[in-house]
Amino acid sequence: ERVWNITINLENGVTTAITDVTFDKKLLILIYGDANNPQMTIFTTDSWSMMDSFPTVSRFGMSYKDSIDFAHVSLHSSLPSKVALYGKSAECYNCKGEMIASLRYKHNATIFVDTNFPFLITAMNTSDDSVICSKETQFVKNGIYVMVIFQNGSNRNSTCDIFTIHDSYNSHLPIIIGAAILTVVLLSWQLIYYFYRNHRCPLYRSTESLINEDLGNINDIDRRLASVSEESIHPLTQRIYAVDAFRGLCVTIMIFVNSGGGGYWYFRYSPWNGLTVADLILPWFIFIIGICIALSFYNHRYVTINRLPSSKAVLKVLSRSVILFILGLFLNNGVNLSTWRIPGSLQKVAISYFVISMLVLCLATPSDTVTRLRRIREIVCIWKIWIGMIGILSLYLSLIFALPVPGCPTGYFGPGGLSENATRYNCTGGATGYIDRFIFRNHLNANPSCKILYQTRMPFDSEGCLSTLTSILTCFFGLQAGLIITTYNKGHAERFKRWSFWGILWVAVGVALCGGRQNLGFIPLNRNLWSLSYITLLSGLAYFILMVLYLLIDVMSWWHGNPIIYGGFNAIVLYCGHIILHGYFPFYWITNSTHSEQLIRDVMATTMWLLIAFYLYRKRTFVTVR
Image (cartoon, rainbow, N blue to C red; front, side, top):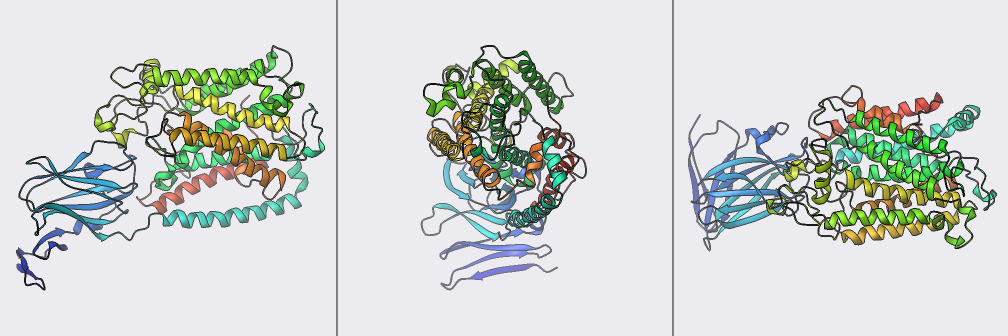
């Protein structure tokens, strides 16, 4: 209840003081400046303990609407003139800073800064529009910081400093602990599976024999390929489980990501350029579709030396494509027909599957009928399709780099909005976005991943027309991987050698196109655009993952793909089910704004779906699209 006068005495005899202070609240007294001109200010700290409730109007640098990673930053100015502060996230490439506060003399303000990426704060003197200082800082979740703008006593120049009051929170600790627990669980599962397989062998074998194809899945392909004649064209007798495990891996990651990914930014889709875990899923899934086309079609002898495909095969392809497309429309959950989103993930899968399947049926020949260039007969047997892919690539590049877009530069790859200092505000996606908006009008994704960070206003869909052209290329790269399996069936060395070649080639092409950088490359690495660098890099990585899984599961039998392989057997059930039931307990419940609680919830949801997949496997139930 008393009124205090506070005086600070420095060793050089200089003093500074604050008068008439009452301690009815928790206060922080901050002394700053230099020894010849010390200054002092007081901050109220009561609100600093309320780190779970951040005023929406004071949040800045957000990459995602539901981000939970914020730091508390108090701002203070001791300059006689008015100071304007601008801020932007380092992830917002070449962006115009947005005003975060305006400070008068001895005035305080409070903001909450997203801590997923470094944040740049620029202070400007409003009297002459001069820059006082710029500070880029990697703030820590729930950290407490104070930024002070003041005059340096020695030269009277204006400057600023950021003081750390508290930043000991490690937001990555839950994911580290979760990864350790997951490792133990997987090892335990492997031991249980080993016991189950060796003591319940009859049931295991009967279940294994009933697994059928899903989305053009493989039939039984021989693991012991060394015993099969290289010239044989007869259907092979056992399945390659690496493909099922690869597909199950994609589905498992997809469920975890769509459940929330523990609230971590690297389990979310990239706002624009760059690559996160979530960005890997769909290209790899479409790559697997290409593998399955090769294995299924050649095993069923749909590919013959005849020019015209069988009506049965064409109807099968058409039926699957239509069903997948309709499923995708249903999962888009359109209740307003005027804005019902038409593009989508399953729609992209359907179109890619249809195009590559029809090209294989109409233009491919059996690899064992190739008489010339037999050392590369897996390429020669589809040389006409290669020409078709070059044509699709040429069309794609022509539209990207040459199509005039009103009000936008030709060949623009940016997100618009605040990017390019807000000079290209309505140019989101360049030619890619322009074509989609021209064709689909309002039937696009109204909330693209770039909307929050770049503050864009234009609808944009990452599953649109031009991105579907590159998804067809991705499916074709998978087709080439599958043809290596069907063509070289005498041992494993030839498969590994060719997979390695294509993997290294496409990774090198992807890195070269983007220049090995997130931004500034010739063709940036971009999931939203499905850029050429994006699909070539991920296709190359898919070759290497396929090799690793093939070695572990089908060659050495060190691992049987558990538990993710069960998701691969019923991929379409898990994909549709987790989208439809998201938001319902036990797959979702409301949590506090902590990574620990969200991670537990999202891991539980993923585990529940894997248990459902395992149950379906035990009940010998395999749902396919036919």
